[in-house]
Length: 450
Image (cartoon, rainbow, N blue to C red; front, side, top):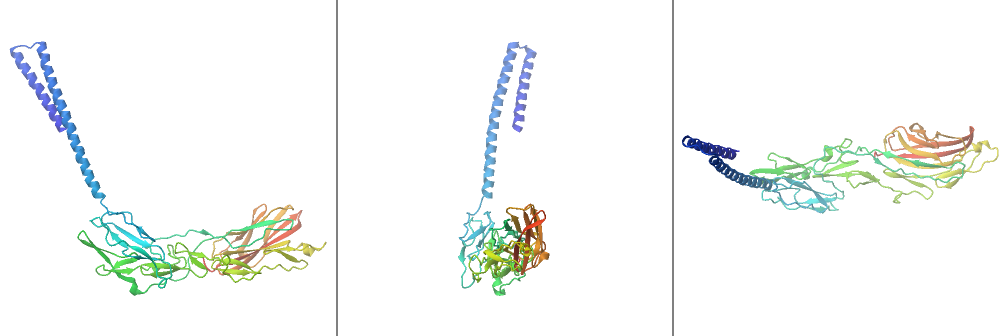
């Protein structure tokens, strides 16, 4: 803008000088129109030449400004992008940290059952090299520690457990020779909660280590291995963080479902008998002793897997006055034909089915446990109800469809406990009883909440 103003001022001065020259000449001798036009053309050519020179100078200045701006941005970009090379994650481990600029830190940790050999923390130096050596993960010595470990990058602030669906252990039979055959199904969903086991701490001597100090930009920076916190008068000591005490059992954010064992820089989770440690190294997974043939049930017994164990159940046909039963399948008894006019026999259940379920302690209620459905109906009415069993106050039967009844658990039950319920389905025609079909449900409740 300054150059443009100067050029305009020069042009105005030149025009004024020309006009002044013309006016001076007019005082002596008047110019003709032709001479006046020639003078104006000369002034116009002069201004055009100055304007072209100005445009050329302006373009040159813009190019210089653009080059200066690009060089400045390049210098800033280069300084911002100064970073150390991308470090590799150790085999059987992982790297924490995605920023590799000067002064930034990265951390390393290993998978369960592995220990870290080398520095847990490395810093990007001004020389664009990482401090320390590349760490590696080594399998734990089986003679010194047989438990899998979990090394957190930092003590978590919270953790949540989402409900998990657990399939009940049940057995049933769908065959029937009665006029009304029926099918049944069960449904159990459990909510995990904490155990009352207390955490175990490691020895004090192995819980203290020297800190790792790095001299950077004229100052000293001291850090600790993951799982330790800086302490001491000169920040030269690292003390183990007891994760088990920091996140106790029974509170939100607990580290282990059952029992936590603190170790130097880490912790272990332990499960009770009948459970295996899950892949996340924190939860407990039930062992199916029946499927894995780890039970001692006899040939005439039924193995029922429960949470944390198993039960050997015996299925025996009921003895009823004036009626006899025969076992038509491992889980079903059928009534033998009745004599004509034997009212006591015809009032007895036509069939008795046995089902075994397992659940965790303190399972939330109300909860659907079992459904009984009629495959075909000969009468005009179906009725569902509770006929008996131990723990009747914990159960209720509701009709969930025209041919379906549902067994509900209406109150939470703390285990270990065994509850029984007898669900009766009656078929009627013009209020006359056509048949009764009984389902005996046995519920084994574990002592654990998971």
